[in-house]
Length: 292
Picture 1 (tube, rainbow, N blue to C red):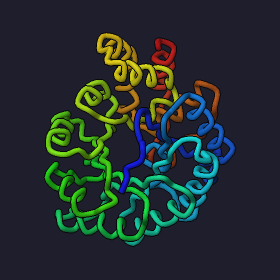
Picture 2 (cartoon, helix red, strand yellow):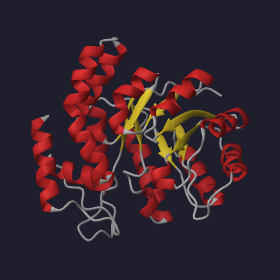
Picture 3 (cartoon, rainbow, N blue to C red):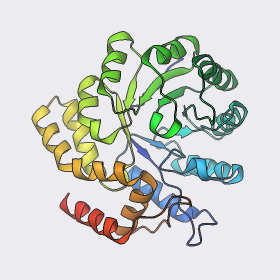
């Protein structure tokens, strides 16, 4: 199965809430998607950790998924995160996303119980057998509690036909070097502070929430990499690194929602138990945005 031409800057979307946190603000969601596309992202990834997919009811998840896919309208490819605690629920989400036009689904093996390698492989196999679109395997032990070795990742790629791409978010650049050395599977960076190193290691793209706030810098870094202008790429990367670090350490939903508010788009707070940024952190974020 083709992995499509997924490349470049892949922008995460947020899920905006009303002031009381009880309702989805679809107008703000649509505006945030339009901003990402106008900013030049090469693909859009709804309902990941930035989009608070884990904190939505099934009905809310369906509504956000369908709305996001309709709003993007094939202007750029879409990668919908369908991760859930059980295989059955992840399969349901994957089928729903495919039926509503997703180009790719992204799967993070999240579980209350620690999963064996056989269980992880079976999880991907079941999702893969249920849909016809490609799957982006997502490795992020910080959020899932499951760290897939390169050996396991490559076994899944070999045995599940539509697992055709890998998003690596461990923060270990050696994982990317191993993937490049041992396979031709396209891989994508999901760790902001590794953006430059990941591109040098051969990453085909960068999955990031940063384009909600600084799309021009993100795109310029990618363009410099494509032009093989390492000195320019380094300068652009270090220019945005303080903000990239802040986004990661402050938590994606809280920092991106605060940043969007500071740049004129009110999208509400993260859903509890996640707190919004406090006043000191918001002021620090404001200073970082002004600096870049």
